[in-house]
Image (cartoon, rainbow, N blue to C red; front, side, top):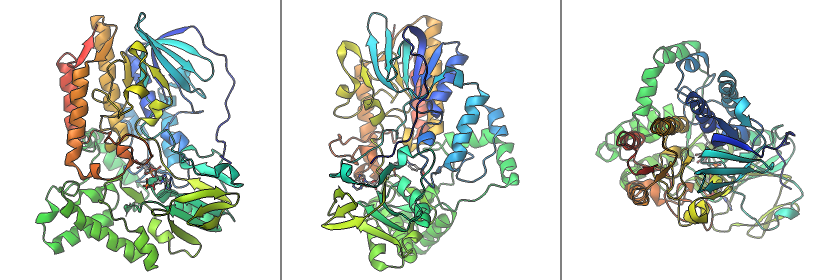
Length: 543
Ligand code: N01
């Protein structure tokens, strides 16, 4: 039985509304877009499937959910007053606090009056004659807008593997990305967790504290670094805020869009003892910056082997049972998949009621009425947590029937992989924009900084169109092709393109294998976007 997470409020249907812009999604991207559209004096409406703002942080309420970018940097930078008035309580903010922040932003900028909640956009169709979009929702709304802006998120379409026998299972199944708002009480239950990505490694230690037994089904072992999360002191907050704009500027200058100490020296040029010390110190600081220990870790396999060896030794040092430790040691490139940041993940496997089941060679065979069967063995379970991730980058677009020129749908156009100029717009779909779309740094940068850059660019673009009296904008196919080619070429330089991650769509059978985010670095990407703008929107046709 799949757990239900939402209840919808009643409201009248809209059928004759005409707007300058419709924004799909009220996560951080949709909220800031609405704010900028209002600033331009444009009429706008946001449709949001959830019952509140916050996007990812609205849906992902699983135990232990928190950010892996330091909270002082995981926030909007567009308002110095907002920066100064908000106080984060921990180095890595927990999900409830990030959701409170999203609600605070919505209230502070009076956003809610233009957001329609509990409403999913199901179709968006280009009207050639009117040069605009007809947007349809699952509540029967039909709204016309000149611009349609997709702020649908990169990790928002849950991946629910179609295991045999799912409907036979008598217990409850919860997806981490659609967690019940009232929470789940696992006390006394035999719980199974499928998956060992970020969502799983954050929730497993906490579920283990409640459950009678916990069985983790692992297909691929995960690289994870301790968070060493801590409370933020008033003194720290004060010193960080003393020159917040400088911190923001330093962050924007980094390939990741967030700031942390980064050692550009190659690992292969360091003496083994120095390297060991460097890794020890970086491990003691913890988090994603561990990957910044040396400059060549994601470019040279031999360099990567040094950090992978170190991390495997750490896992073996934590996990007492050697067979379990072996299973938990990844054999792929360190940081190839999104690196996880944990609190007590590996330690959890030392608990007597926690068991790890390898499903790499023998996959989950089926669900039974009483549990999950692997390799002829039935694991008896009362509840299952599906931490199986998302149809990343394109899944949220696929959920909407987006029809552009000549009846072509975006899903058809993207069948062999996403194609978008700068990850912002796609040829054949005039006046349709995507925020942090495939082909932009998006998930490889700090999401809020990536969102702000896109929204600012789009607002400037729409303001420019208004000033020159243009009513339509669309990328040129040859510029889009060149950009997509460039995104692919750049990805080959990084070891990140070498493993079966969601970056390349390989977590879900049947998806095309294409490296989707732009890995050339945030500042280079920003420079390209700025050049396009100062060059009179080169690569776009404006009419
Ligand atoms: O999803 P994932 P996630 N049988 O795709 C396994 C962000 N995020 O929700 O690796 C068995 O990473 C799958 O196995 P494999 C962050 O960017 C951030 O954890 O494909 N197992 C994998 O172990 C992150 O990267 C935070 O072999 C199956 C797991 O399920 C992204 O969201 C927190 C399976 C899915 O892992 C996604 O993370 C949470 C099957 N049929 C998320 N199908 C922060 O800290 C899938 N799996 C900010």
